[in-house]
Each structure stands twice: as C-alpha cells, then as structure tokens.
Length: 82
Image (cartoon, rainbow, N blue to C red; front, top):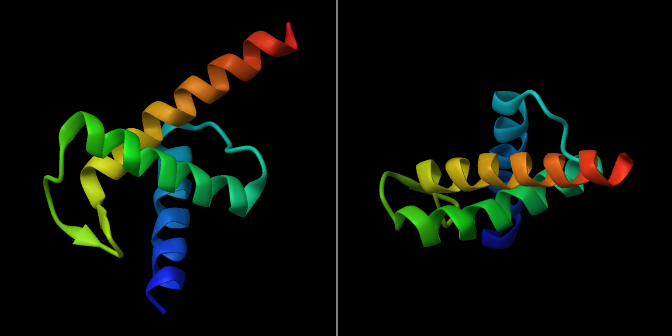
C-alpha cells in the first residue's frame, strides 16, 4: 500500500508542477509520476528534507525539484523540435 501511496503523491506533485509552470508533462500520468519521483530526488538534493512529508516525499523540495525538471525538459524538447 505504501508504494501505491507514493505513486499517487508523486503523480500529484508532477501534475502540480506542470500546472504551476503552465507546461504539460510528456506521457500523461506516467510522465507526472516520473516528474514527481525525479523532481523529489532533485529537490531533496538541492534543498534537503525541509517541510512536511507525505507519502515519503518532502512536499516543498519535491515540488521545487519537479518544477525545475519540467522547465529543463520543456527547454530541451523545444530545442530538439527546431
């Protein structure tokens, strides 16, 4: 049950980061989950484990990391389309 909870929270973090940046995450729900997990790792590496935790994720660093990840991925995809 803990793994499913982590998938749900990771997906919500990825979705929220996409909504904040105004950029869609490629691959839909799976992309949101990946953005949430990778963003959580990135944010935790940058900011540490500050703030409340939910589903094994420190919410604030995970959201910041997912936003950074989405901005980088959208920039790279835009460069590849040119």
